[in-house]
Length: 245
Image (tube, rainbow, N blue to C red; front, top):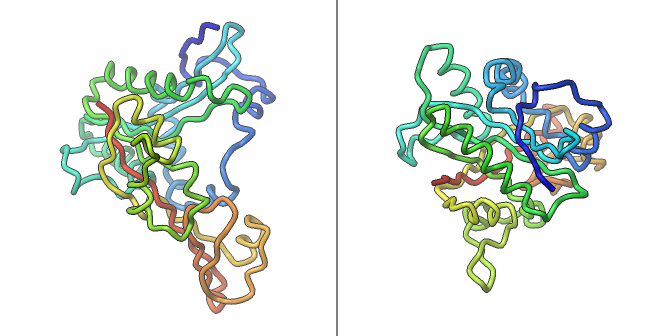
């Protein structure tokens, strides 16, 4: 089948198509990043040209991906702290009139029924090509490793070095990026910070959180820190910075 790329805002899309595409989604707590909530409206408005979909011959979306443009000097030491900081830098860079030179790929998903057919790689390639066409000479991605949730107690700095016997990355999402020529740059141990009340966290995780301490949570890449005295829970999600050629 032939797939084509178009902007997400190119047409109105039936809700059932979007629900099918995003049906696997992310953990419910992923929306509890308060800084992302503050900036995401401007991201969607200003950087719609970097919000893309891969569609089939009937214009049904089979994959989606998006990114933001920002300025980066090419040094590992000056990488954004992670996903959230990338949004902040992109928005504030635009507000200050700074010329971006870097595409940060913020996410890509494939409709579950079509996973394993190389569509994620096509989506990433489309984002890279769109960024290059816009004059963005660097391409970065704060990668959320899909199997890290199986090892929530392992520091991200160690997890990102794990390899299979054939030398490829243990994590399949890291492997997808590596097949496109990307290389690991650095860990982003606090790529996002999700904050909520203990009651909210119990709803999001389906767990009772009876005392202060650390909890392994469903879908979490690391542990949740609960402070019963303050009535809050804080989760800092780790990602892995990768650089595309």
